[in-house]
Amino acid sequence: MQTSSTHDRIVVAASRLIQRQGYVGTGIKQIAKEADATLGSVYHFFPGGKEAVAVAAIAHGREEFADLLRTALDGEDGPAEAVDACARLLARELRTSGWTDGCPVTAAALETLGSDNPIQQACADALRTWQNLVAEKLLGCGFPSPEARDLAATVINTLEGAEVTAQVTRSEDPLLLAGRHLSRLIASYA
Amino acid sequence: MQTSSTHDRIVVAASRLIQRQGYVGTGIKQIAKEADATLGSVYHFFPGGKEAVAVAAIAHGREEFADLLRTALDGEDGPAEAVDACARLLARELRTSGWTDGCPVTAAALETLGSDNPIQQACADALRTWQNLVAEKLLGCGFPSPEARDLAATVINTLEGAEVTAQVTRSEDPLLLAGRHLSRLIASYA
DNA sequence: CAGTGAGTAGAGCGTTCGTTTTAGTGCGTG
DNA sequence: CACGCACTAAAACGAACGCTCTACTCACTG
Image (tube, rainbow over all chains, first blue to last red):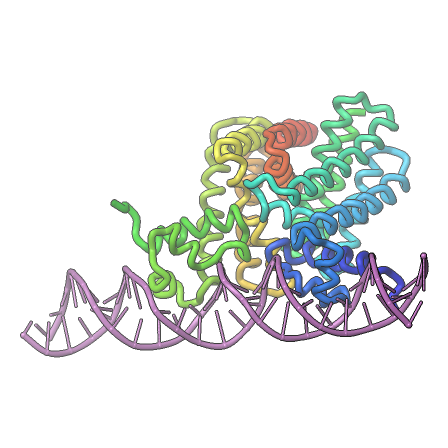
C-alpha cells in the first residue's frame, strides 16, 4: 500500500538518507532499498545516476525546510519573535528525530566543495531560498532593504551552525540560545 | 627532504583531506599517498585503522583552529572587536585556500551522527575547546559568567554556519557579515 | 656477529561501490 | 490480437573500499 509514486519515494528516501549520512555516505542501492524500489527504477527515473538523484533530493529538502520556516515565521507578528520561533521549532524537530534530521544540505555541500558540481549549486540555491523567506518577513515588518537582507543571511547561518552543534552535542540548547541572541540582535535594529 | 616524522605527516594529511572531503569521502590509501607514506606505515602507527587516524586528525584540526582563534582574539582589546577579527581572519584564510579549507570538523561530524562513535566525540571536544577560548576572552573583558558562556557558544555557532555558506557561495560576505552582527550583539550587552 | 623490534613496502583478501546490461512485466492504444 | 511504452527485476561489470598479511630494510643491543 503505497500512497506515493516510485519516483517520489526515491526522492524522499534519498533526501532523508543524504541528510543523515551525507552524499558520499549514501549508496544508490541503499536509496533503492529504503524507497522500496529496485535499482532499475532508480536509473529509469534518474538517468543521470547518483548525482541526479541527489540534486532532486536536495531540492526536496529545500522545500521541506522552507515549509518549516514559513510555519514558524507566519505564527508570530514581530520579527524578533518570529526568528525565535524558527529556532524553537527547529530544536523540537531535531530532538524528535533523535538528533539525526538536521539541515538537509550542509553535509552534502561540504563533501562536494571545490569542483563546480550541480550538487553544490543545489545547496546554494536552498540557502538562498531560506534567506529570502526570512528577508521577506523582515521587510514586511518595516526593515529597510539592505539591513533586512543582511540580517536574514546571518539568521540562516546562525541557525545552521547552531543546528550542527545541537546535533553533535545532542542538546536543544545551542538552537534555543541562537534564537534568543538573534532576537536580541534584530530588536537592536528596530 | 621531509622535516616531520611519518606519523605527523599522516595526521596532517588526514586532517586536511577530512576537512575538504569529509570522513567517508577520504580513503586510507589517499591519506597514505598524500602523506608520502605507505599503507603499512599508516596501520603501523594507527592500529585502530581509519577511525583512529580520523580521531587524531580531528584533534590536530582542533588545535590548528584554536591557534587561529587565539591569534585573532589576542590582537584586539575589546570583545566585540576581537570577535569581528576572528571572522575577518577566517574569511581571509578561507579565500586564500580557494574556499576549500573551512571548519575541520563539521563535515566529519555530520557524517557520523547517530552512533556513539569516537569521531563524534572528537568533534564535540573541538567545538567545546573553541567555545572556551571565546568565553575566556569575554570573561577577561568583564562579562559575567553565564552570559559569556552563552555568547561564546553562539559566536562559534554563527562563525561555523557562516563559514559553510561562505564556502558554498565562494564569498567572504557571510563571514564578514557574521562578524559585524556578532560585534553588535556583544556590544549590546556591555 | 646474531638478534630484536620499529618502520617500510606492496600484494591481495573480501566486500561494496556506481553503473550497465538484458530480460521481463503490465497496460493502454491502434 | 499486436504493438509500443513505462516500469520493474536482477545479474554482472570494473573499480575502489578498509584491512590483513608477508617480506624486507635498517639501526641498535647483547
